[in-house]
Image 1 (tube, chains in turn brown, green):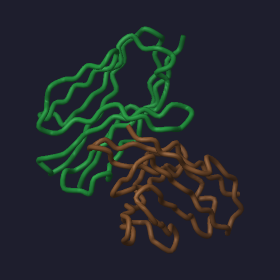
Image 2 (spheres, rainbow over the protein chains, first blue to last red):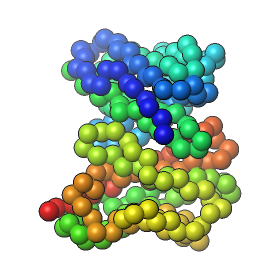
Image 3 (cartoon, rainbow over the protein chains, first blue to last red):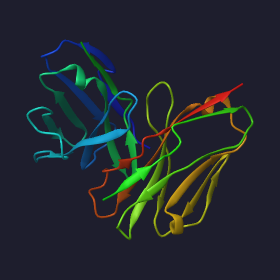
Image 4 (spheres, one colour):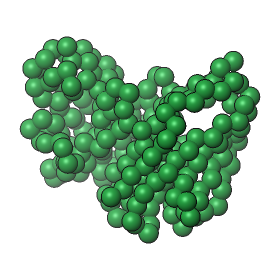
Length: 112
Length: 116
């Protein structure tokens, strides 16, 4: 398994502000993944973060809205920029460990 | 295109009943992986199983069992003698061998409620 820590675990944010979510893994991994789970919905991949290169975004997600950093092999951040109520979701960090994808506990954001 | 369908939105059973959660998938890839995850009310996603497309053997782990049938593109999950702690949302997911690892296509989830 993998130990994945996310901060914050939850937050309430004001419209128009930005929030950065941190993800720390207990060992080095090549790729880290960011998913979004909107209320009552399934999970959708936002982007894949490789250390030393720009993140690869999925259709419907753009860097200006969801900038990602990957400064080393155990850490990544996802920023949700210029938030609106539609961004209220759980954001989850995940890593692939020998073919098994493990998830952090998620960061539950509520945008007012 | 890849797709995962979990037709059962909600299931409610009484403790000790057996329950099967259905999962039907679509993919054009010959090599792919199927997953099941559990999401309890606390919100974290718990990995349950990964199965590759070349392994059609059924798997049993305690009270959990999985039935993979390529002929019907299904990967169903059965909980035997359900318990209240099994109450959660269960997600089935699909990953192509040719995708970057970690890109999962999730079904909409089935919310299982086990009553005492």
